[in-house]
Image (cartoon, rainbow, N blue to C red; front, side, top):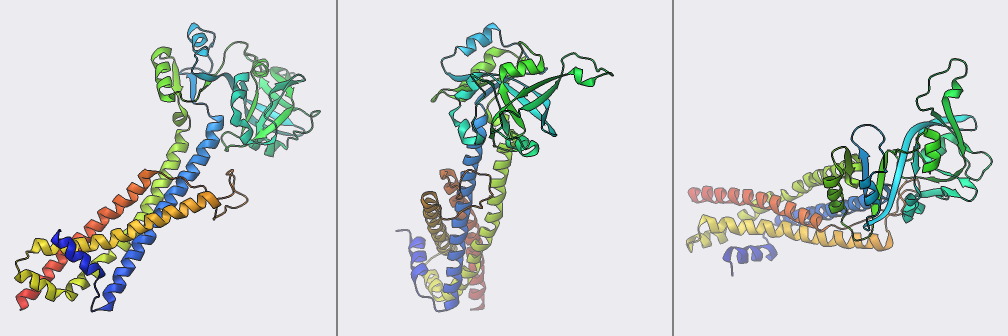
Length: 410
């Protein structure tokens, strides 16, 4: 058996002559335990929020988007796009024509984005999960309908149950010149009833989704579109599919996946998680470095034992390793127990929703979401291990120096 480890283990459980040593050691273990448990719980909660937010965004964000590098519109009726539309890996292929327009309802008006989509857009079965009022309906036998974001609905006070009071949309006529006699003649004005309201996030909620043919009439664009949104069948690798399109489509188009479409969102979620990790790590470091005082007092308590070991031929390296192992065992005990307790708490939160969220939150859950990532457990374990080793190494070096001074005095 490793001699330093064996002696360190005996010291860990042996009774000390000074009660303060036990108290400081206990404080160190409890501090590391609480810090480790808190860190893994917070990281798991952030994972849960990330999954919920991304799930909501992915509901309305396609897996792949094709748009022109220059200009706003392009012709989708080319040989490449016609062939791409027949690709068996594609679940939905939606042509999109979008432009800003003036929206008016009763005596209120607001600027919003008009997004005309083809019927393939409705293949997304998750659209109902973001619909908070009415239905996600774009057309039926009676005509066309619009589905508006919650920001538009809140500002214009649109009543989705009133089919006789449609939403008016104003768009400048393409290539038209301003008329000094009647400026209204320079706008295309169409009315469309609102079938439902959806809610995702502020940047998306200022959008009115309409049928593509309605958008073409409104914007005076009979052929061209602004983008193509593609969702793939289950099991298809989106990255490989995107790469294949990039290799064949040419330099005049850009192809974006979900991360590129929501780059700011992904950056924010990542930076917030790392900020919390750094803050809690500093608190954890304070708890870990309590071990220095505990080991220094332990050295004083075990001077006679160390003297005996020295007389038996034990060198400074062996004595350093004893206190290094001692410090590591104290802190890693707290770390492992903290990770286990944090894991069990997160499991209970997942199953029973112990901690509820405010009723005013915008997330579609009534309890704090939790999700596990093995990398987080490894990160916390490595963090505690590194700082535990540093603190234990410092205290063991100080302990040996103190022993040298005592030997000189003797």
